[in-house]
Structure formats: C-alpha cells, structure tokens
Image 1 (cartoon, chains in turn blue, cyan):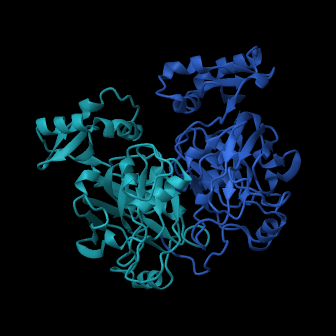
Image 2 (cartoon, each protein chain N blue to C red; image 1 turned 180 degrees about the vertical axis):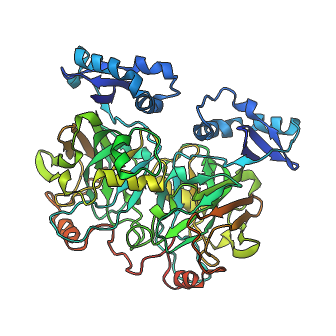
Image 3 (tube, each protein chain N blue to C red; image 1 turned 30 degrees about the horizontal axis):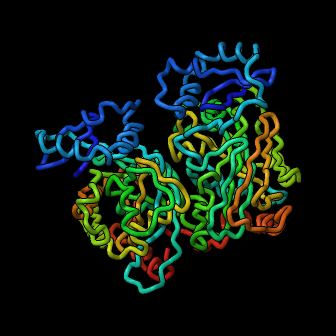
Length: 312
Length: 296
C-alpha cells in the first residue's frame, strides 16, 4: 500500500489506478490535534484500519495523481535519524564504524517543493539520494531479529548537504539541517510490498542527467542492523524516520534552476526544485573529487583528528 | 517568572518556596501527552504572560512532590560545540552546533542510565539552556534575538566519549536519559545579563565544573543568530550553549550530580550503570589540558 500526504494536508492511499483516495476521514476518530498526528495515528492503528485502506486502494476512483499536490509523506517526525556513509562504494575496505546524526525536521519538503540554498559560503551543495525507513511502533533495544517487524514502510529521501561549513575536523553535519534540505517522497510504501529492501535501485537525475545510480545491496550495514543499533541509542516512535545513508559515487552539485529527481525502485520518485538567490555556479555533472575521496578515505572523517575523543 | 511542569502534569509558577498552579491559563491548549504538551503551551506562553503573572501573584504557593523537565521532549534539541575560551587567549573557534535526539531529555531527580556501549568515559557537561517561545529565523546578533526566548534553564549534556567514528560523537550525547533539563524555565526579565552567570557542577558533593558564562566564545545572542541562519526555531526547542571543559569528570554508577546556575536554579540527577564500570574519580585533567591546547 502507498500512503501519501497531499493537497490541504490530507492523507490518502495511492490506489491501483494511480488516483489518490482520501483517507483523512478514517483518521478523525483518533482526534488529531493537527496534521502532524495523522501519520503516527495511521501507523499506530494500522491493524484496525488495514482492511478499509486496502479496499479503498483496490477500488480507486480518487483524484488522479497528476492533479494532486503531493507533500512529504512525513509531516513532523519526532526525529530524523541519518546514517553517515554506510555504502561500500566499490571498495573492499573494512566496514566503517556505524555512526549517525540528527537532522532538523524544519527541513522537510516534498515532491515539487523548492530547496532554497542559503547565502552561506558552502564549498558546494550536494544531493544525496537514500532509502528511508519509517518506524512502525515505539521501539527501544530491538534485537536484529525484531528490527524488520518494527518497520512500517519505506520512502525515498534526498539528504541535501552543504559542504565545508562549520568547524574543521568536527563534522557537525549542520550543513544538512538548513530549512528545505530534507526531501521525502513521493509516498510511503508499506513494508509488505518491499520484501527485500536490500535489493532496491536508487537513482538521481538532475535536469534529466543521471548522477547517482546504485543498489541498496551495497550497504555496509543492512537495515535490520541500523534499526537495531539506533534503537539501542534512542527510543524510536511511530513515524520516526531512519535515512540509511548514501553512495557518494555520483553526487553532484545542486544549483539554481536544477530539477533533482530521486527514485527508489519499488517505491517511486519525486522531484525537488532548486533556488539560489545568489545564482552561484558549480561544475555540472558528477563530483569526481568527492567520489574519489570517499573511495580512498571513507566517510565521516573529513579532516578529523585521528586522536578522536574530542569534545563539545 | 519561573515556569515549571510538575510530576502530576500541572503547569506552575514557582514562588516563595512553593508552586502556584497556573494550568488554567492553558486549559484551551489541547495535547495528548506531557511530551507534546509543553511545546504547545510555550507557543502561547509569551503572549499570555501578564495573565499568568496575575494568576501566580493571586494564587497560593504549595509544595509539589517533584518536577518534570520543563520541556520533556523538545521539537529540536540543539547543542553548541565547545563555546568557551577556557582560560586561553586563542582566537574564537569557528562557531558550530549539532542536533541531539530530543528523546534524551531527563527530568530533575531522574537517573542517567549509562548504556552498554563501549565508551571510553562518560562526562557531565553543565550548560546554560535556552528555551524557545516564538518561531524565529534569521535573528540579528543583538538583544532583539532574546525576544524569541521563553527563558533559560539548566542542562547537562551527558557525553559518551569514543562512540561512533573519529571526532566528537553526536551519537554519544543522544542516548536516552543523557540530557537532564530543569528545574524551571526562568524568563529573560529575571536574568538581566545571561553572560554573567556562575555555573557549577558537583559530583557527590565535590566541586568539578565552576565557570562563568562571561567566558563564552559566542554569547547567547550569537548562538541564536547563528542557528537561525540555518533553521527555523519553534516554541519548545531547546538549545544548550556549550560547556567549559575545565572540570569535566567521569560519571559512574551511584554518582549524585548537582548542577547549579545562579539565578536559574539547581538540577540534580543520579547515575546508574548496570555494567558497574569504573573510572578515576575527580577532574579529567587530560581532557582539560587537551581542550586548552587544541580546542574543541
């Protein structure tokens, strides 16, 4: 099943006939205080709603997809957890240490929305296409064998990234938390429709030109390990999202006027537009220098002190 | 005014050794749980201040059994790297911040639980906390920035070192229970100069951290201007302004922590480590030296 947020913050199922069938009425019984409650309520009560949702999805007859404005399927997760790196990228290096950062929810945008590049003097702004896991229940200290059962569904994600800002050797990842820098879409595909999330094909096209093109089979640590590990750090809530990292082979600049389309097979694709009031220009095409550096030195250690253990 | 959230989910104003219940001022604010309530309350708090002050003056202060963190789950929890000069005369370091899991907040009197992760040490970091009361973006770096604040509070940025990849770990500060907050949100009018507050941390009665916010590299108004250059702040967001590393030390099983910021209050928590690991007690001089030498 495909769960979308659209038009005036309505929730719908994307039916077999590619129309969006409104399900907002079904969620009123849970007394939502705002649109941010709709998805967590749907997830929490999915068991009791499922048969009705399935019949609406099968019946179709809603509003044609090309006549709705899709929004991010995630309105306001309590947190956005992002993996650092997490792809092999064609190397045979040892698996890197698992590490994460948290991203501002104010950055959330969806299909057709505009990423606004800030005036900050970043080295470059990159797209990073990822698969994102939507959590299905409150979860802490999950075993790997329990992890997949705690997943509600999957969505496509673009982790827009400003490089070169902040303190050297620290990697605060704050350059990923500008407003409009967290693109999710086009909808959430429920986990039952993705039997193996480790064989999905992820691409980015910028103005029709292919950039990223990789398989989730290349992940350093599979989704079940990510969910289990992260739940050992922080309690996960229904509707929270774990973004599984990117393969840096194929990153490139985002600049004024660019249309950036992120696709994940089995889920779908969505497009972000790009606006830069400064109209800065970078080299177009794949950022080969970044790709080489990540192959050679891995991720998350740009300029890091090898002593580690620094502080904040 | 000192706004608190009590153990029994009442919103109160502390005065004269007790708490006046002002929950009625927020009766129209719908919520589901204590966790999502305070951001909603704080979104109207500044506009209703005079009404709340009148209620607090007219009501009777009563003892309460305990307090919750004044924001049990902030929409965003933002932490500054370093941000103190620490007795050096180095140039100011590049300003930087990161986000922590908002699920890590712990109430006053709560227990920090050290996780079964192979940290090299767990440190207490006493910090000045800022609680947001109005949406804000692109604030100026002057006193106008303070208008977005509901007030100040105490925060302990518990830090597991050596977890995650090279460099300072954001993850190591995001474990559940790793951000004690409280006891109250102290409105900005009570703190005429946030850059002249003494911050202390005692562990089992022994003084560890003892510094003044006058030593901040980037003062509160610059913290607010910087972060709102990146992201919109919303009511209930909490920022912790960084710590002075001179005086950090290990936290271990059975420790009692008491943090205090003058004019803001005391925040006490205990520590539990199911693994019963041990580290040297007292101040971590090696960490203190390193931060003086190479910064944060």
